[in-house]
Amino acid sequence: MSLKLNSKYLKNFVNENELDGIKAQVETAAKVLHDKTGQGSDFLGWLDLPVDYDKDEFERIKAAAAKIQSNSEVLIVIGIGGSYLGARAAIELLKSPMYNNLKKDTPDIYYVGNNINPTYLSEILSICDGRDIAVNVISKSGTTTEPALAFRIFKKLVEDKYGKEGAKDRIFCTTDKARGTLKELADTEGYETFVIPDDVGGRFSVLTAVGLLPIAVAGCDIDALMGGAAKAREDFMADFDNNDCYKYAALRNILYRKGKSVELMVSYDPSFCMMSEWYKQLFGESEGKDNKGILPDSVVFSTDLHSMGQFIQEGSRIMFETVVDIKKPKQDIFLENDKENLDGLNFLTNQNMSVVNRRALEGTILAHTEGGVPNIILEMDEINEDNLGYMIYFFEKACAVSGYVLGVNPFNQPGVESYKSNMFALLGKPGYEDKKAALEEKLGR
Ligand code: PA5
View 1 (cartoon, rainbow, N blue to C red):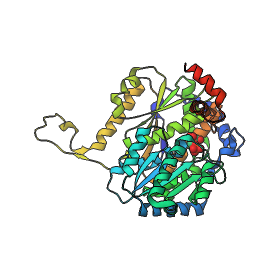
View 2: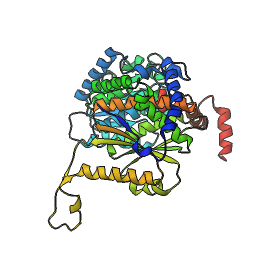
View 3: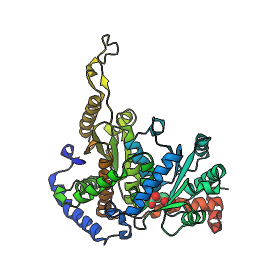
View 4: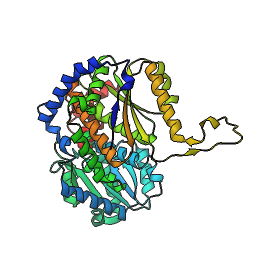
């Protein structure tokens, strides 16, 4: 199991004194986190989750996954933000971004309720036509509009196809243990429910039933995933000098204070794309408040070297890169020599394609650092469940510590409410009448 921070390319950007200088702040932040005395301390359930989770429910998750695998060709995962990104990220990393197109003995998985676009939903409804489906609706609050709307449509689809009784075998609800519209509906209809613990916020919930059920349906080993996270929990209790998680939190803050206000998560594997989306929510929602925070963004190389590469090399010097360096790809391709060499590519042959990708990584790190972009490297030996669990915990803890060092509450998201109340008002939700009139006026209607 591995995830190692390599800071050797930071030499021209951060010196040892600076790390020493911020060390006490990071240690204080970590103590506040462990002692549960900081802001948002009601939402620290994820800290011990890898060892302190509901083992009976864990077995029920596996049983539900096996049932879905045996009776369904398609699983519809309904959720938004923290209620879907982690599952999708894990499945695409561990299996493939082309998961649905692979030959496999597990159901295809589609994600809905993460937008309100009618074309997107219609297309997925068509894909379900004539196929056996199961639905996992995930919402902690149980009241979020996007998933609630999608669930209304898929609930009807399942009931029309299998009847009210049959739907009980095919609809699984992941929500609060006691509160919310979804919990009430699930109890009324007799659907199996899984719990999002009170003290685990959405973006920290991938290792609860929120992520685990879809991940298990995709055939991933959720025991190994939790095992990796448990190992990280242990490793990242170490003191600062032996703790890559704390050092990463420290480096981010040092760079931020030097004007680097954008972090680009870089990977050389398209299967990491959704992990970057998960990382963006985790850090963006946790740190972006009080007019502060590093803007999390992401690129996949070499793809984006042909779109964003110019800006990164020579544009505004506002960013640093965090490169996820996965040493061994899941598959490799041997590049054969071509007698005619018409394309002039024989200099690349008689070796694996992963070597070409590695030289691209090395060359790019050197070019970007020379162009004034600090590069933090996170090295992972290979993609598997253990390493993913380890990495998830690494980022979660780094995010919490980094947020406390920044001086924000990493566990709330007050800003997310603004668009919701505007949308409700414009849609004429009862109780929003005054606001509707004011907004209509601003829109010039
Ligand atoms: O991290 C968060 O809290 C949010 O992104 C939520 O996960 C997201 O808004 C979905 O909320 P809910 O699970 O209540 O539907």
